[in-house]
Length: 284
Ligand SMILES: C[S@@+](CC[C@H](N)C(=O)[O-])C[C@H]1O[C@@H](n2cnc3c(N)ncnc32)[C@H](O)[C@@H]1O
Image (cartoon, rainbow, N blue to C red):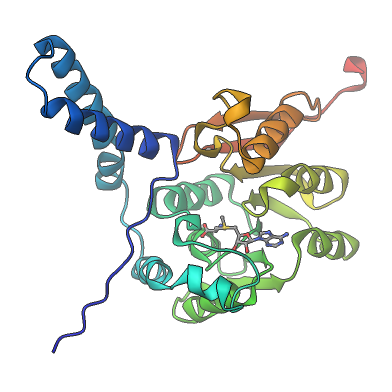
C-alpha cells in the first residue's frame, strides 16, 4: 500500500484570488445557460481568464524559490493547523494561508538586496518562510531578528533554518511582539528593514514603536503585509471583519502621519512600503 499525503488546498486570501474564485463560479453558472447574449458570455469568460492567469504568470516569470524555501512551504502546507490549535499544540489559531510564499518572499528578498540592508527585523515569523527568504539576501555578517509568539510555529522555522546555509543569520525572539520590541529598543538595537506581519490589531502599535524609538534606522524602510486585507479596506465598512477594520485604521494612520511617506502595492494581499521623511526646520 502506498502512503498518499493529502495536502489541503489553500483557500484564496488575496483580492485577486477571491475575485478569480467568484468569476469562476459565475462562468460555471453561465456555461449551464443557453439564453444569454454571446457578448455577455464572452466578456465574463475573458474577465475570468484575465484574473485567473495573472498569479500563474507571475510565478512563471519570477526566479524560483530555493529548495529550502520550497521544502518549508511544503512542510507548512501539510501540518494540521486546525487540530494543533484545538489540541493546544499552538497558542494561536494558525493556518497554511499565513505563509507569504514565492512571489512575496522573492519581493522581500529583492528589497533586502536593493536597500543593502544588514539588519532586518520581522514581526510575525510563523514557520519562517519570509524570514528565510530575506536572510538569503543578507550578507554573511547580516542579521535577521524574527519575532514569533507561537513556539510550535517557531520550532518548525528553526528546524528549516538549520537546513539552509543562510539560517545562521536568523535569531528568533519568542514571545509577544510588543514586549520584544520594547526589549530590542531598550538594548539600542536598530534595523534597516522591518517586515510587519503579525497581529493586525497591533499594527498601529508596532508602527508607533518603530518610529518612536531607535528601532527603525534613520534611512530604514518598513514593509507591511496584508494592507488590502482581502479587499475589506475598500469594500463597504459594514462588510469588514475585526482585522479588516484594524487594517483600514492602520492605513489611515500611516496616510496622515507627516513623519513618513508610503506606497501600497497590490502585491498578493497588499504590501505597503514606508520610509521616514526628514522634516526640515523650515517645513515645521
Ligand atoms: C501571517 S503570519 C506570518 C507569516 C510569515 N511572515 C511568513 O511569511 O510566512 C503571522 C504570525 O504572527 C504571529 N503573531 C501574531 N500575533 C503576534 C504577537 N502579538 N507577537 C508575536 N507574534 C505574533 C502568529 O503566531 C503568526 O505566526
